[in-house]
Image (cartoon, rainbow, N blue to C red; front, side, top):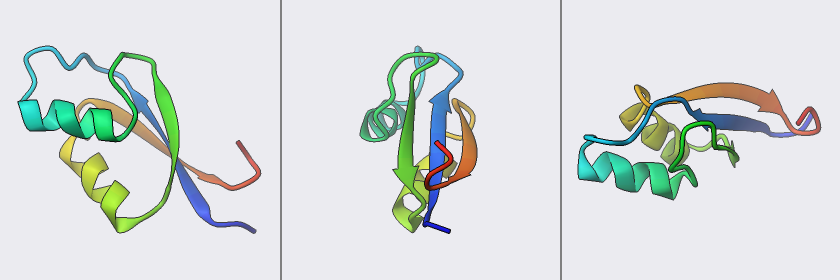
Length: 66
């Protein structure tokens, strides 16, 4: 078993969203609906996910099950 990873997918538009939330989406590697990225499960990433949770969908995955 490897380390946990998170698949983060943007499901809502960032139009008319707080500027700091748009910056958080960019930091997560997102910016368009349907775009997804895989990140390590760290407290920093969890904090960013919590901030923009209304714009994204998150799935936990085990390394190797990508």
